[in-house]
Image 1 (cartoon, rainbow, N blue to C red):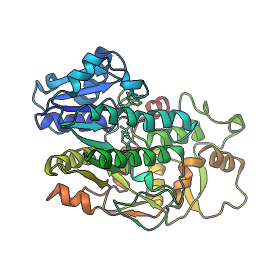
Image 2 (image 1 turned 90 degrees about the vertical axis):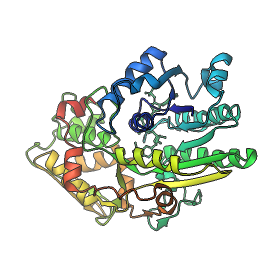
Image 3 (image 1 turned 90 degrees about the horizontal axis):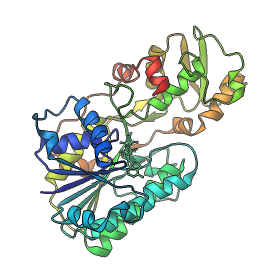
Image 4 (image 1 turned 180 degrees about the horizontal axis):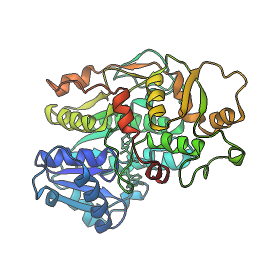
Length: 378
Ligand SMILES: NC(=O)c1ccc[n+]([C@@H]2O[C@H](COP(=O)([O-])OP(=O)(O)OC[C@H]3O[C@@H](n4cnc5c(N)ncnc54)[C@H](OP(=O)(O)O)[C@@H]3O)[C@@H](O)[C@H]2O)c1
């Protein structure tokens, strides 16, 4: 077996790599920087993880190759390309640009054109199955209802360009698999989280964005307010008592899944699914959503003095509430969501794997438990 993995230096990819190594796979990691730099980053990330257990020499089974999604041919020279594709059995494509704000062009380059480059590499490895990591957020603006794993539509539109880039890449994977009679699996994780936040310098989790925002609003980090609009530098309420109303549905909820569980389920599902031409899509999601109220209450334990409430309409917002709402418009747009995700294909593939533990107030309080300094700098 010969496995190629992109994105191993990231939050999810380092966990996938650890799972693959625990199964005794030999893995080629493709990523940015020199092979030495890549090795240093990936080893630090993988070795910091506690599970699954690895034997002392497990990391010796990893080969490091410089490659960039946005470069034609991934920036590989012909010899390296031939070496990678020769005998390749599995190609995990987990690298992506994961940003909720900003210019759509870099997202298109990394996530759409980058996936095109990965599919071209797979063309050179006819014996390899493709395992593509997308996101449950390809469901876009559909805020209610039960999303099926086979659903892939753009009729509701997208909340942010990141979602659309993953949707377009999924479409490309479908066309590629149909055109070449190839085997492809699309994994769609929901929002991944860990209650063992990594120290600065190792891959952080997406909720760190929320923590940074709160540090800036509360003004208790070393760079407090640095990234906020200048108006927010005006007198802020004392950190000892900040009532913060967030516009959103008080019954709104989102799906959060433990990142370690997600990686384990994905590698297990891949190992237990026989290759077959066509695309199988699996929601790598939690069976239960978390209410925004629970998230808000966990934030309150993290920031003593903070009181967060949700309200469908923000009557007479304070200047801070208005500016913070504008500043965090994209993340806050999710606060109206209640949608749930079907997991039939995932459950069929992971067999008897027990459901994950609850992501509840206690879990999220630990997840948000970084020191103010590290989260603000993070
Ligand atoms: N985390 C979540 O909650 C979540 C939820 C659903 C889906 N996903 C999906 O899971 C995948 C991984 O997400 P993540 O959370 O692990 O993100 P992440 O921590 O930001 O890691 C992204 C990875 O992609 C690599 N990458 C980015 N641009 C690249 C480029 N131009 N060339 C080569 N490599 C590049 C990064 O390499 P560098 O180290 O060089 O930057 C890093 O290894 C993505 O497809 C994401 O959409 C994540």
